[in-house]
Image (cartoon, rainbow, N blue to C red; front, side, top):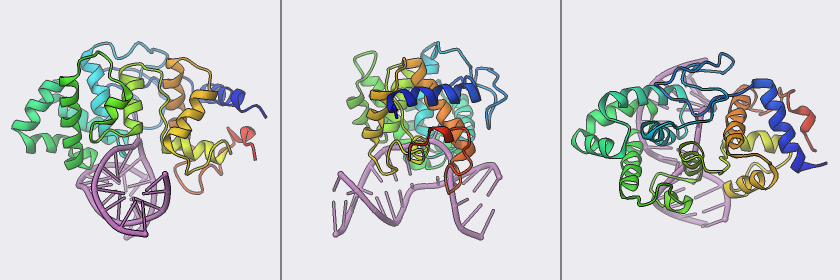
Length: 238
DNA sequence: AACCAGGACGTGA
DNA sequence: TCACGTCATGGT
């Protein structure tokens, strides 16, 4: 059993099944991918040249925080609300959040955890205002309160196009079901597993994560996870 | 009406 | 380290 090869074979299988996912979605970009579950706008299949500007970069960064344990449809509404109140840059957000705390919270309330996320958005904004370099280190991003492993990789991979594999609950469900990892493995061990064994560039890192989400939404959202997953059944290794 | 959603943090063992 | 409670809201 060649695990290293299997991670690439699984990637190919998912890509063949669902095609290009066009992540990260943007609220002001009209892409089309009718096969995707949930929202169909904002995705840009097969185009990896994002973010195209600073505004989109911070849309990814703010969205990465807003989507913590939250459905994307809710995040999309929050971003649309926010877009009417502030420009997607750290100075604008921080200024508005401090002067109009309640309006700011009302805008993002639909994404849940409003009190926490309001603070997290202000924290990351301060971080980028003070940032000296163009691209922050993973360690420095993690020092921001509200940015954990997954959000850090989300920001690095989709906002800064850094080759960091993003792991989420779906990733663990699929690959523990198939027998490649254990459900309770640490974030970093799963991340390292993919980075050591999946051969792909930064665009394929983005695509793999998006494909995992698409696949997991269909077969790994209800327990027992994976029982109806016939697509990846051939890759089970136990 | 319980359960889940593209997690992170604080606490106590 | 690690398991567990908490954080909020909307959809199914």
